Image: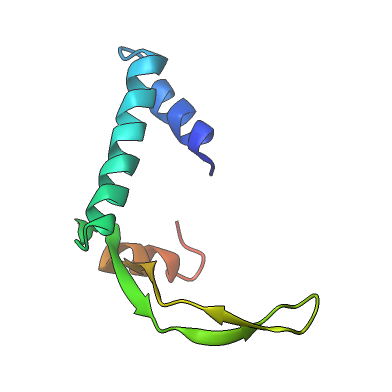
Amino acid sequence: MIRSELVQKLAQENPDLSMQTIDKIVDLVFKSVVDRLASGGRVELRGFGAFTTRGRDARVGRNPRTGEEVSVPAKRVPHFKPGKEMRERLNANGES
């Protein structure tokens, strides 16, 4: 599912809200998650999962085109851990 499909699904389930309102809500939710992670926080959505960040150490990589060594700086990367309810639904052996 892509962002526009999410907005469309929400619009179908909430006909009393305008597309612009739904679009703003989706933007606000995504922005809030990113802002919280950028500040080093954690975002937990009960029944869905938790978003956190993890550190990656600096390393020496290689340019795949030239084979030249390239210094890759340390960085933070997003990490998602699915919640119990999501794991159970995904592993329900084909049951819906």
